[in-house]
Amino acid sequence: MIGSARVRDVAVVSSLKKLRSHTLRLSLGYEGQAADAPSSIILKMGHLDSAGRSTYANAREIAFYRDIAQAGSAGLVPRCFEIVEATDTSAWHLLLEDLTDSHFIATEWPLPPTFAECESIVQALARFHAAWWDSPRLGALRGGWPALDDLVRNVHGFEKRLAQFTDRFGEGLMPPDRRDLYRRLLDQAPRLLGRYQSHRHLTVVHGDAHSWNFFLPRQGGGVRLIDWEAWSVDTATDDLAYMMAMLWYPDRRRRIESLLLDRYHAELVAQGVTGYDRGMLDADYRLSALWLIMRPVMQAAFNIPPRVWWNNLERIMLAVDDLRCRDLLA
Image 1 (cartoon, helix red, strand yellow):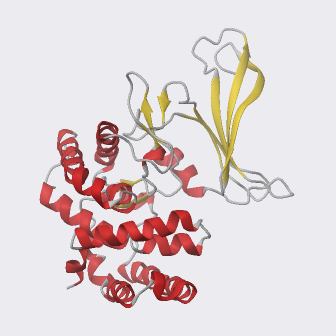
Image 2 (cartoon, one colour):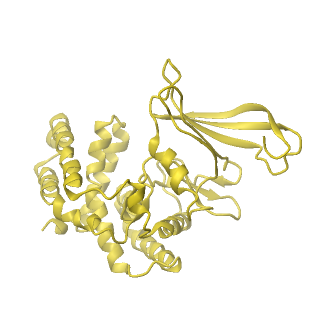
């Protein structure tokens, strides 16, 4: 029921299956007065096993819409009309605002957006990040801040994946200088994790902030961030480095990377973030780029296609050199 109206019929307009979820655009028909009711809606749900249960619980995105989406980020994420968590006997789903007619994705993968579109994207990211910047709720969102030993243990768990990757692809993709870079990163992880352990200038980060997870307004309105399955609490630059250092080729990145970081920082300040100057943003960005060398190895381990992770690997390695990230390991 919506006011005096109730849904009379539902029809599937379109359907998109991904590795772990199924997204449907549904048109809705009503009985009664439904002036403010949506004419269509997005149903996001998991793939089901033979017993009708979700094969993947999507607990993180469920938690995002339950605990985070409406706290300071209104207008930056789709409205969520219903949240149903997975149980031992039932599947999860989200009913979300349909942005198809009001918004668009800037480009077809893997093409990058225009500079103006990138400006809109990084400014929207800054507004979202600012809403959670150093919030006293950050630790609670994770169930308490993890201990350094636990963080180091997680990083060193990566060693097994790295060894498997190296054995599989050999010196073609893992020549000695790259293996040395990974070894030094793992060796110095406890020191580098001190940035996170400071619990200062942290926020909620998207975790998969490529440009195809941003809906841009067709006219008026604001940018919306979608697909929150990988959010975490960390340095905001994790999102920026993923978008630019990992996903852009050097010529484009060198031309506009610094300009977009300027725009991002200016928006942070405009949103009230203090004590975090432009130099601190650069330092965090370089560290985020360095940590990102782990991402392609993990993508390969989880059977992401090579057309994705190999390009990511080569681009992030070029960015690490351009940004002098190896100096962070000196």
